[in-house]
Length: 197
Figure 1 (spheres, helix red, strand yellow):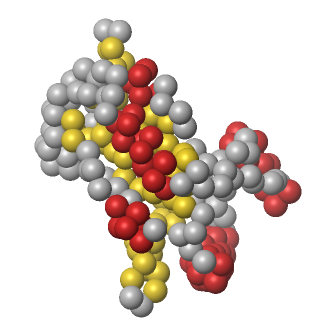
Figure 2 (cartoon, rainbow, N blue to C red):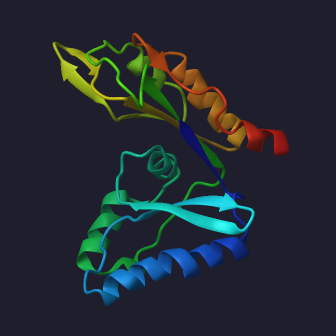
């Protein structure tokens, strides 16, 4: 499990189409039902031969997709969220780092089926020292002075870089410093995009 983000994932025409035909219609629909949405809405899409298809909408910050976007955000997230609540989002400027980002999920063996919890996690401080890396906790707990596993998706090891290759390299370098019993992760995140470069 994992995800990546680059500046050139979508061309301007496709970005405009998605905004107009998916995102704006969802927002307009909620407003028409007198349940206006305030916050961050994630539109999960799958690109198919017939165009984008909506898989889901959610507002969770714990997803790998959100984590990959957040490490590219240069503007202040708290200010943006306050602007949402106060109804002045249109006056807020969002700034994004150019380049790419990647998130690789460290999961418990057996996930999404049954898995064991309580495994000691080591290497978090070392992983956080890799330039451009943020380690997001998803299924962890702090007990007896140690971080331990407490879920199926345990960590989102996320990195930003000038290129996708650099971001993936940093994410996997950091992942290599982390360990817990039964840790599994995919080693092929972004590989198709890299072969197209």
